[in-house]
Picture 1 (tube, rainbow, N blue to C red):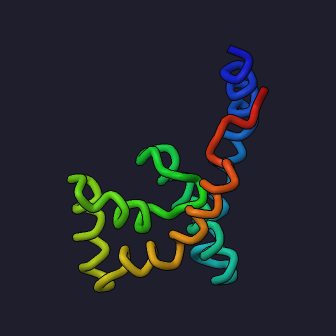
Picture 2: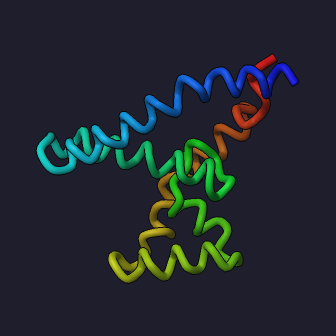
Length: 114
């Protein structure tokens, strides 16, 4: 119960900041530096993976899709990304899998509050 309460308190502060960050990312996408926009999109990708796809926060949707390629949603992601860049998800997984393995070995996926 303590973890849920702490999560609620944190989310009350983080969600408005996340919305502001998204709006700023849109602005940066049109008028800002490419590097800043790329970093924001990468962070948003990891956020979407962790929340919508129940993946790891340090992994992109593409890498997660390649790991879970037997699932229907993952096959759809792979199909869509392949229409833009052939083998994108496989390359993303090859690049990110060592990070996932390290985070799991260090136990960073475990509960950290209380």
